[in-house]
Length: 177
Length: 358
Image (cartoon, rainbow over all chains, first blue to last red; front, side, top):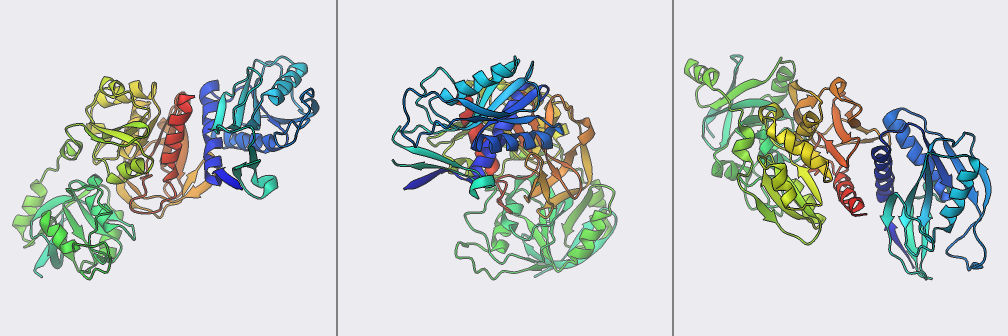
């Protein structure tokens, strides 16, 4: 049984609020770059960038990072750390304010890998993290700066994010394992 | 029904049939273009001291019901309609419009060529006074011309004392400039524990209540007549607490953040203008009622972001502060009456309060 916890309207609002919070926190959009974490994070990153474009009439560079899946619905080998397997970033992050965007924040290991990858590319001025859902159960000292919705969850549950670009609809659902 | 007249400052007189109260009243004549919601309109305090012409030709056909009060004691000065209908088929209705107006001493006049009247007012150069009278003689015009309408509208309709509207959720302080009940209903639906404060409240009064959010309400009249104390309050509060402002509250929020206002040549009351939500570039409709608008050029882009714009007249319909979770809309987000699609601004307000908790 899947239960919708964030519907399409709420997802739109969450991304809108995150966009405004990014402007608030960064005092504008100067030097901002957005990096989406594949797969769903990329689409969320693009939506945030398009909102910034609408509001400020400024094109914020968007790139994406491909990280080996560390999915909460697959039994994983506890010894395996997620790794960055590809990056599509055609701009420099040197001195930039990087916003990492992902759909679900869980253990924090994906984000750690993403941060290492960004650091390898250059020295950003700062890295912030925006997530649509924070489901808790962190295994690393990582915290999101912009959160769409906090969904306290059991580790037995599965959180599924759908985005209309590839899933034909916008929703966040909880499924009992 | 008695023959009565609507007379205007420009010397014109319109003969019609009286309904409601038999009182002689004067007020600023404005047009409401909404097709629905005459009860919400007549009870909305933004119409304090105004005589409302309804573009919708048949008024009264759903009576008066307990769900649609925007205030309990209406302070509009009159209704001008094409046809008044006293056949009510609404199951909620316990009272006819005629009875309601009699109880509240508000006169109505029907049988008026409202299309002609609205067209004429639209071409006008500014606000027009009018009266609903028994005899349209020179004396009546003298009386009308000598009438000075108050500019203390907010004082007349806003609460002088704080009162609670308890629930179990977020603590919200509503600053009352003559609020419409739709605002309280939307907050109640979201379980907000509301305290309504008079508009003269200081930032200290607000902060003492330790609210999760503050809402600046709608209200009548000119925001320029309310002095600078309220602007100081807004500036001090917005830096501390998520803030949402509607209607008159939006105009004050703009003033407090350095923008300027202009009086519209003709007040706009309707819900047919497409409004662009800039951030997502989509269109919404909302009930609007405004005599003033923020001057777009006066907006300091280092302090405010324009968030909504009216696509018909180009007026600024929404603003947001750059540094704080403080935002405002000119239109009535509570959607009473009218399109409901802007109600999720209240959800946005709720989420701004939740996000603040971290």
